[in-house]
Length: 338
Image (cartoon, rainbow, N blue to C red; front, top):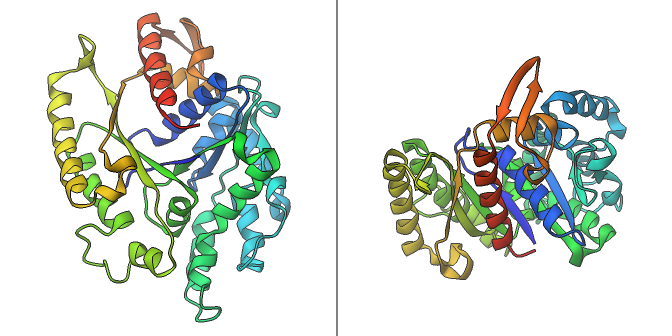
């Protein structure tokens, strides 16, 4: 199963959420191979998976420095630009084992490394899509990530793989490509009006609901080529401030507005949801836990309460805070089909 993590709004915690969720799935399912696909040009997920914000940045730079031979999604897309309409048969060579770079990573966690070149490549991808011949140019380009992930999953054993795709907020062509590589969509939100409006954007951009560009946009193209966007697995209410084991009133008020938008969307487009049901998850604000986990590139389950040094400053990781967030991410991981 493949899960895309996306919201049209930035700053909702998609990247850290993708890493922590993928790492927990890997730890809970040692017989599975979990693949993190970094489809954001900033490649922040790759930094975390390669060793954390502290060490992963240099390791990412080393991989990117290989030029045409770099083992990144951008490196693979370079090959597809030269061969846009068919698989290169080299897909599995782009899969990186996280533990070879990051000793804190589970042995069964793998990475398709992100690449800033996606921004420039997107312009070329759009040009190839617009070519009149072959007639399925748009479809072929939009299958690039699907082909890459499929090749990697087949190499590791397709039935044993779970893929988590971290997406950029922008609905650029590389995000469209990510949507068509995924089976399910998880939408993280935070407690603000922008996240509520972003729900409307998700409905319009991916599924064509209330879109003024419904006859020419991504959903229409998907129908033309018999392609299916991912089904919405859940809306995750992220970074909630907890009070007596539930969201505090101010956060609850904003999340209620988000829920109203989701239910309205679900009423009109029920087929966009898994089993035609609107599902919600709730993640408490992890505060220091996420900072420490992402800095070290370490799954929450492997963290211990105590004092950590981050960029020369000592931070204290509270046991209750760590336990609360770890339980929440485990609960969400356990709810997914793997």
